[in-house]
Amino acid sequence: MPLSDLIGYLAATLTTCSFLPQALHTFRTRDVSGISLGMYSVFTSGVALWLAYGVVLQAWPIVIANAITLVLASAILGMKLRFGDRPAC
Image (tube, rainbow, N blue to C red; front, side, top):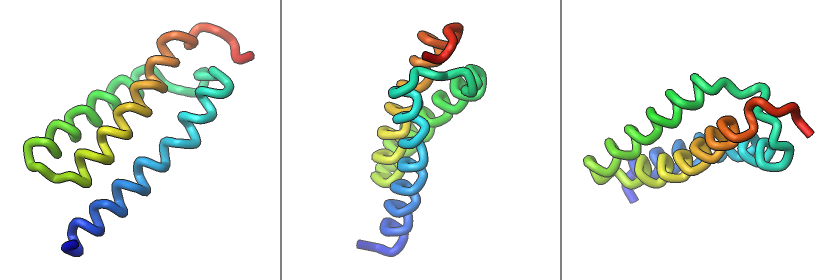
């Protein structure tokens, strides 16, 4: 494996894993009070574009990382839309 791919996969793993604590916390508590709807909307759109970019380039570290991140960010955004006006339980 070329060094550039190794660096890409490592970066992808670290940045994607950084979303897991927030996603797990949000799923468990349904507390989205500290999450900005505007920020997550723009962020999720940006991740979708990074995914498309990776597909066009056939850059698999970019594709894999952004596909996983898009699922996580979309889930958090969906929970913000669904539970955003409710107090945390």
